[in-house]
Length: 221
Ligand SMILES: C[S@@+](CC[C@H](N)C(=O)[O-])C[C@H]1O[C@@H](n2cnc3c(N)ncnc32)[C@H](O)[C@@H]1O
Image (cartoon, rainbow, N blue to C red):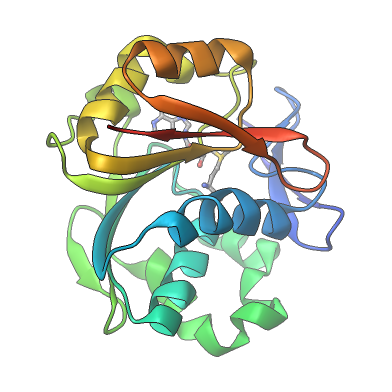
């Protein structure tokens, strides 16, 4: 499928799929969305010295580099699993220009390592951050029960990828979380909220990033 690079309203870039009219990030601002949805509403809510994170849709590695930077700052050990069925190419990474963003200037090497690391193997990127990239489709992914403290659910939206938001997948995410584990997503759709509740999550609708009123956070009790 055709992928092109576009600029979003905060100046950061994202990948756009013209045939589906869908983007990897909010067109209101890719970087501000990633910081708000996954860091502020997920990572910042964890109260652990060491944690395991699962990202559904590793894509550009934007959420991973933000998490790596935060792990360094607060000295929290992270084991980060990124599931991705359709990896982004080296040329796309270059064209996105994330390593040129001022916030990331001290982490250019680490950002490059996130992408050059082999699939299917634990790779220690920094003292605090270990990465496991899995090149796999969600339907073939069988996470261990209770393995993760935090899930960044960053699939394409339900309009283009409804199967990713159905109960079966959300149940798999629930089971993959440890007790008190957190699930965050940019999506705020009523049907997704109801599906999350029906598989057992305690769900909150919380303020979304600029340009989006709400988003969802679920906790496994
Ligand atoms: C909305 S984008 C977000 C990407 C990434 N989190 C980022 O910040 O760049 C969704 C990602 O999910 C991946 N994806 C789509 N369908 C998938 C599937 N069935 N299994 C695993 N990954 C999938 C896409 O290739 C894409 O990288």
